[in-house]
Amino acid sequence: MGVLELADRTRITLAARTLVGRSRRCLVRIEHPLVSGEHAAIVWSSETSGWFVRDLGSTNGTLVGTQRLSTTTKAPLRPGARLVFGESECSLASDGPPVTRALCPEDGRSIGEDDDGVLLLSSDPVQLVVPQGDGWVLDSAGTPVRTVRDQEVVEAAGAQWVLELCPPSDTSIDSTKRVQAIWLHDTTLRFIVSRDGEHVTMQLVRSSEQVIDVPEYSHQQVLLTLARERLNDERNGLPVAEAGWIYHDDLQRVLGMSRQRVNTDLHRARRVLESHGVARAQDIVERRLQTQQLRIGVRRLEIDPG
Image (spheres, rainbow, N blue to C red):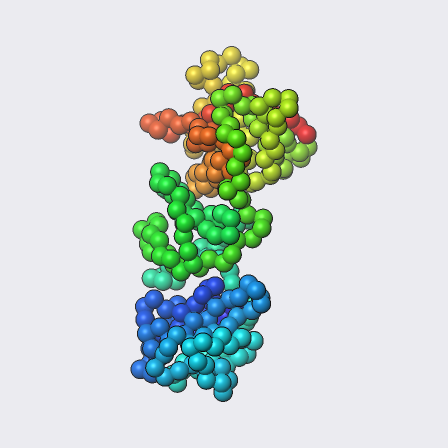
């Protein structure tokens, strides 16, 4: 990651676009009378895989080494590069690529990407920043998905978070890839489980000629556990209306997960099914709110030991 070291040895991790100045909007705040409100910007270039700095029309100028920048100059930066904003010196301590995160300026907390390239801002209600195409969207339970941008401020878990967003990686979930609408009530959900039980993939089976493969994601363990619960109850003769229900606390114990992790994985499961063309993907899980019970919402289930 890119790191800027100030004159007092304070180190600041650079966002994909970092403002330098006196303003509260600046990630690098320099309280000096010769520094403008928004003095300069340090920016990561994906084209050159490196950092550059440009002056934003400051009153007292920006220097890289001894070079004074014009407002049209983009000066590349290398490790150890000396920068002067007004009369305040700093240096580029590290020139690695930026890291996607959400930062709470009030107390310095930060949230980084998980293994699926997602930022979890809140689990109750679930609020995720999810890669989509070449950008990012905010996916909040109960509200429409909307586009968010680097340096945008969003509210979650009772705090304000600044989004520091890099271009998504190619391995992220791409929810823009759609196929003809699939309805869960006329689809078989097939789980393919490795012999050691560590790896789970899924298939959406509509007929012998239409099978849609869903690649492995960590959240599929939650769906597999719910599927086993429902199949076991049906084999034991429970009526359809009562088969598969499990208390949320019991599900947490079986999986060895926190409530936050379970809720987040279920939310991701819905998003992945949507990306494969499933209509009303929220029906993958049914809930009894008063008793805190839930079950998988698909009747036609298969578990293949692989």
